[in-house]
Amino acid sequence: MTELVRELELDGLTLAPLTPTIGAEVAGIDLRQPLSSAHKSALRRALLDWKVLFFRDQDITTEQHLDFARNFGELEVHPFAPSKPGYPEVLAITHNRESRGRENTWHSDVTWRLEPSLGSILRALEVPPVGGDTLFADMYAAFEGLADEVKAEIDGAVAIHDFTHFRRGLRRQGKSEAEIEAFDTAYRMPHHPVVRTHPETGRKALYVNAAFTVQIEGMEKERSDALLKHLYAQAAIPEYQCRFRWEANSIAFWDNRASQHYAASDYWPAVRRMERVTIIGDRPV
Image (tube, rainbow, N blue to C red; front, side, top):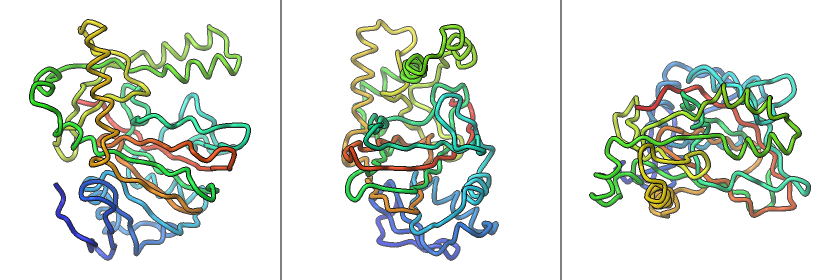
């Protein structure tokens, strides 16, 4: 467990933890400016420690958003979700009276990829007067809190992931079955460990999620469904969570390898307008 403190100083940055293990607000940085090597290193260390970092009052351009993200790796282009015109790496996520929020399921981003993302950087452009918070869950804690018999049952287990709800959305958009089959071929239900080892910290994290995991490989379906239901429920335990209240020009940067998130869709018909950039990761082990 990370040391319990009110504030931390790290290479000129101030970190204010939201909870003992997950989430910290970062002050003392202007993301309109290129990152110094010291700040880049400090933010990477802070991300590994706190799983999600929050920044307030960052009135940045799209180019500055992309530049900040590229400090931590190459950027992906999402094959299904709408992008910002002229910026294929930027997801445009807008909900309003005509479009209710749909991200209210605990998940880690793009686990239906063979190499899911390292992390995501979400920027708030317009937020509801109340509501629309995002919750984050510490998946190290979720694994560590499991009963010993459950840990033994999932030791070495592998789960199958799929982009199921995107497939339904493609059909609603009028995509042909041939087009959907092409997506199926490109993103062919990868198999990831139920418990992954973080490539930088070496810690074990629970790595199944209700949005994209479909079954534990080689396990009878009834038992797989029951076990997955139990594992999914770990993200909903309040002691493993932090909750972030958005303001315009707030930014969240989370580690998809060690956390899950849930966007509360409690603000309809108000407007919530966000942009997300996602950093390519590696194959889970």
